[in-house]
Length: 288
Image (cartoon, rainbow, N blue to C red; front, side, top):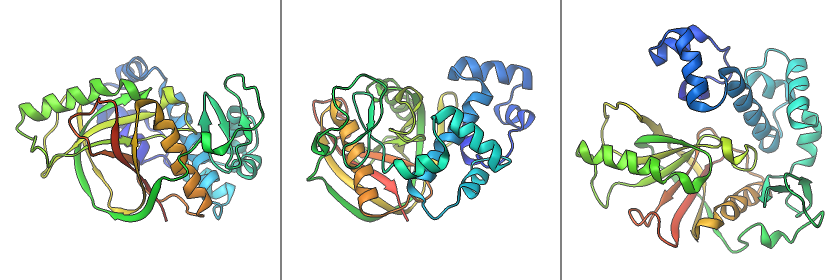
């Protein structure tokens, strides 16, 4: 999955992927489907379309053709047909109508609070924007450092990520990698909440490490890129993460930033009281 994410613009080569995973192509395809709940082709198509939706939303200077090519589609006509089939509108219409992806109770709204799409029934076609965001949130542009992390992958609802954190923390403790309180807990997002359905949002439960580490089993490693980020500071309860992410999305659009390369992530400042009643954290989104 990491390889596919980092090579989203390239053709999928089953033999190459199977070699990376150390399985035969036959067994790799079956195991991938069992572990992810998606076929390989479905997964690749989904992340390409979600990446394209993100680029359409935040990168107004890129043409539809450039976006199609950067997301691995071999032609603009193939991309256009596929996008319309899965999203329900053309790429150009999506770009014009989607100012951001603010969500509440399964429904999607633009930055004016007007309803864009329904996943659940709603009594009104609009909503007070202050119910979707934290209007007084502290958001600044910062240069964030590169960070080496080890991780355990989680997919789906955020509140279930605790098992992944327990796994990576136990592995780190057994390998003498915990340096409290210097070690940071970080959730890295590989899909954008609001564009991807929450059940498909891939998250990595990470802890920082100071040196290169040989990983095994469920534990992987990666580098969080240094760069320019929009950083929002929040003190929130478990049920307010959607509102915090809405706030970041709203702020980026209103301040005319485009998204940069790299993954969004959260750094937790309450660290090892991770499942308390309040979360103290920064949400960091790469921007240009």
